Amino acid sequence: MSWDVSICRFGRQYETMEEIPNDERCYPLGTRVEIHAAISRSFPGTDWSDPAWGVWESPFGSIEFSIGNDDPVEGVMLHVRANEAVVHPIIELCLDQEWQAFDMSNGTFLEKSAVPEAGLRGWHEFKTRVLRQ
Image (tube, rainbow, N blue to C red; front, top):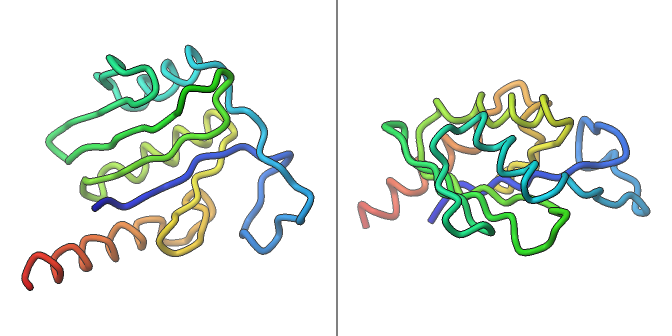
């Protein structure tokens, strides 16, 4: 169980998913080496022993970065099990790379959201309810 965020790059930056035309496509984010470097700058110590699956662990929690086997990398899925301290580094990573981070739980782009932590908060509430049962 994780809070999932999908990172992609479009032909331009969008404010909402509804703005994206039906014929828009995602562009490659970069080479595997470039993606490893960008993620590792924002999340130092990410373990890339499996080049398709980076794991970052910290006192705040963990993030698994699924980048797949394609080179160039088409997209990154983040599986987040951490507190809100990780949200802004995710946003900064995307802004630095001209990527967009789509919150799979509430359908918003993190870097465009007034409350980018909302999806993570919802995931924590859900996880707490499930674990109590």
